[in-house]
Figure 1 (cartoon, one colour):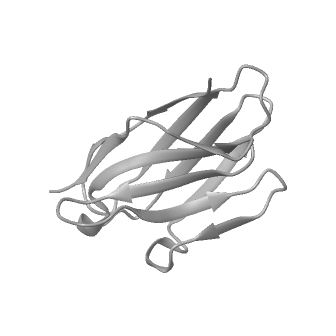
Figure 2 (figure 1 turned 60 degrees about the vertical axis):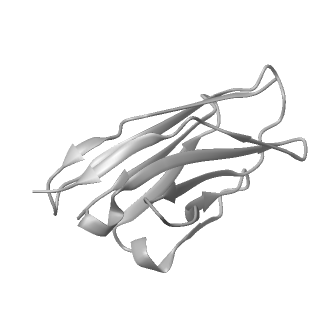
Length: 115
């Protein structure tokens, strides 16, 4: 079984920064893509940033230039550095991991951007 745990959410003022972490317990399984999604109230879950185990990354247009995804394969951890946060970034952020063609989700971490 693969366990996914996010951390690092919280309340931040507009223009501020947060760093989310996602730790994966893979029990020896190979991890493929590690991605960050978010879901705001009343909206569908959307991809924020993705990373492959080969090192490629991609971002939603709304966060390009402000968010950076990175991963530490030795620690099975993926990070999301979020800078210049805006009110519209408020959402629950989820980590999604793909391992051996199965998809695993964390429980989510709340990010609230408000003055």
